[in-house]
Image (cartoon, rainbow, N blue to C red; front, top):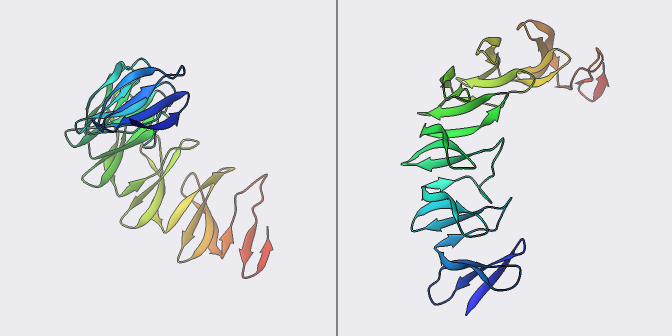
Length: 232
């Protein structure tokens, strides 16, 4: 007897006697025997499975594409491959592997994010920085928080203040604001003591923070609000 779960033409089932998981194929026959302690649905031809307390990925033949040696894998409900890579946890540390299982970024970090504009955010001892695709440090691990790069810039946080860096790590907007972000037409929105203004890519304040709300610049104009009134 078995409980059956539909998973993209493959039916995930649990053997009630062994409590192991396997898969029925599209023809209704057992395609992958019930031998996994946990199993997830197939996504892009791969499924996350657990053997003992270790995670791996199998294909629809049941072949281990990524061996079940990892403490965790960001796949299925946990995540997915992005730019051909996904994060894995090994011996308590995180790194990135490709779809063939090659460790592209070594598992030496407390946390990893995803690549943005060729750089990967990594965390050691609650501090964040960036490495390149070869795993080489590019931006020192010193920030309390970082976001993804967009249009060549990334918002960073240090000592409860925000600024912007470029892909070389140069701090183009000093880390002195309560918030900085929303880059459009050469300007960032910034907030100081609850009021909003704008700063440019050289770090120069171009509109003092006097507004209750600001939106992006488009074609040289930006909507701003003071009290209940809007203007440009």
